[in-house]
Length: 391
Length: 180
Image 1 (cartoon, chains in turn yellow, blue):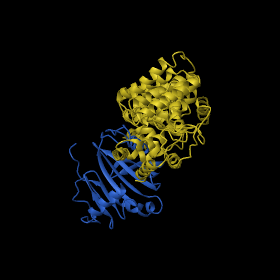
Image 2: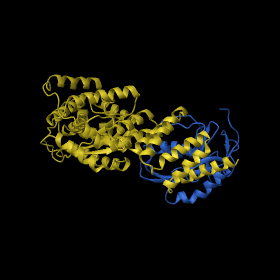
Image 3: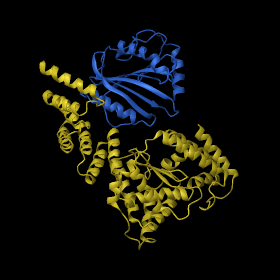
Image 4: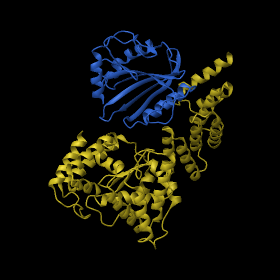
């Protein structure tokens, strides 16, 4: 309710404040009353959001993202604005920026990218929303619509439809992440973002590949979640805009930085973590693609092979237990002190009625990890194996 | 949401008995309702509380296995081990955006009405920042997943009514299985 009140206040403030519809980038950001309110509100929402989401703590990744941001950002930033990227452990495809330059990117989105240039395309787009002050402009534009009250009603109705997301992300976050800005503002962010990308020396065609790549995945996987591209207006129109720019303005700017190897090496912990999250929500195929991508970067990782085994075992198809078993065995071969695959093999044998084998693997699991959190279950299985043998 | 729930409960309280077995239940189980607790019964929920659900409630559900969850695409399947069922439930709970700062305290096997199942104990915060503690028991019998959970405000209330919930749990009996 507070959020609805907030937007009503903003709308009415808009009716009485300065008539500037497109404030110049260099203008003092906090010079206007409505923008002060938006910034204050954003800070509150960010604080609340940080308490709700799980942030991926990875110093190397943070430094890497800071480097990309520094390459992309224009020489002159609006006063008070400072960019920072926060990676959220969330398998859903999303990214959004608060007006002060704090950009949130989900691991789900990062895990789908192929190289640094694609990440730069995403960050540059979000940065452009900030430098072009789209939040402020979106709110101010309300007052210029002919049917002012209809617009307010539509906004409120739209908010009530997405109230869960608004509650979670806050109002400005929800607008940036889910409902998106207007077609004009999204288009502007694409154009300005592309300019940042080219100025930083990135291969601008990767922006297009990012769009294509994600769009086809959305269609293929029939993903319906709130999403950076999917719910923003006229995705195809935006793809066409970028294509048009690449064929005209940036015609002679083919090539440039991609940094695929560096990107994947920095992102690999996020890729594996995201596969774990996808498994948790039962997106087995996506989780599998994530682990396989990770294993293309890091060949011999026991935890990744164990996770692959978990995907096949938890999918619950008995004909896939053989594959699961093979991955667990591989994990044990790489790291014989790793207890988890022992337990998993024990579970498969236990369910198949192979009590002696099950007992052997459960015992080796407890030997390797005597304080494993599911110790009580494993002890129960061993007891059952003994009982069945006696019986 | 909780206010709405409380309102519904207040309405139901008018006609609810307490301190009795739910013999008139439309569910496949019977449970003894502690004295002083009030019952809300629908097709979906069997919920009892002493003060109001925001302070403490016990919830008993029977759920067809295979029925989709809200937050995970994983489903419960016939023949799953209690630990595997617990993992699905934990995935469902921890993937819920309304559950903030989820912390698992215990995940262990348990026996409910003679059936092999699991118990999980966890804490979480809601969006208003209040902290709750939940003790959740579950087991699969046939094509039904039965679960009994007790949730209360972590401070003061959880411990205060835990013994009462344990009595509810002890009184739980499956009385009839619907054809599934």
